[in-house]
Length: 155
Image (cartoon, rainbow, N blue to C red; front, side):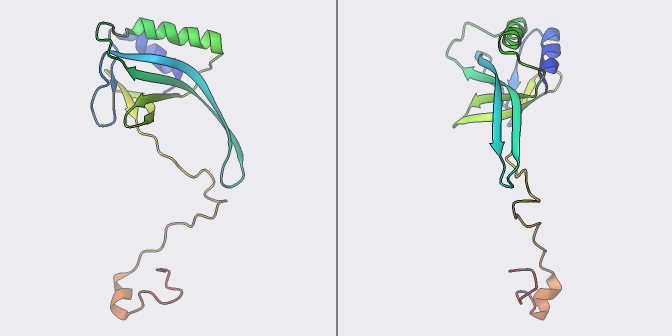
C-alpha cells in the first residue's frame, strides 16, 4: 500500500485497527511512534548496486489504555512527516514488536489495515549461481536401480 492510499482510507474511517497475519488485532491502545522514510543502498549477491525507499510506520503497544489513535491524528502525523522529511508517495512498511521487531507490508480489507508477511528473496538469481530447482526423482528410476547414478540428477 502506498502512502496516498492510507491517507485516502484514513479520511473515510472513524477508528483504526491493524490486523496481524495470524488474524489477531494489534491492541487498540497502540501508538504510531515513528513515521519516516527508510533508504536502503546495497549490493546484491550478483554484484548489482540497488536502492530502495519505503515509508516506515512503527507501531508500539503501550500500556496507555486511556488514549486511542484516531484516523485524523494519524493523518496529521503523516502529513507533518511528508512536509518535514520530504516523504514521497512510497510503499509503506510497518514495524511491530513480536518476539523481535517484525517488518510487514500493508493492505486494507475495507475495515482493518492488514499487516502482510514479507519474505526475503535473492534479487540476482541469474547471477549468483543458485541452481534452478533440482529435477525430481522418477519412480521408474527407483525401480530400475538408476536412482543415484552419476548424471541422474539426484545427487
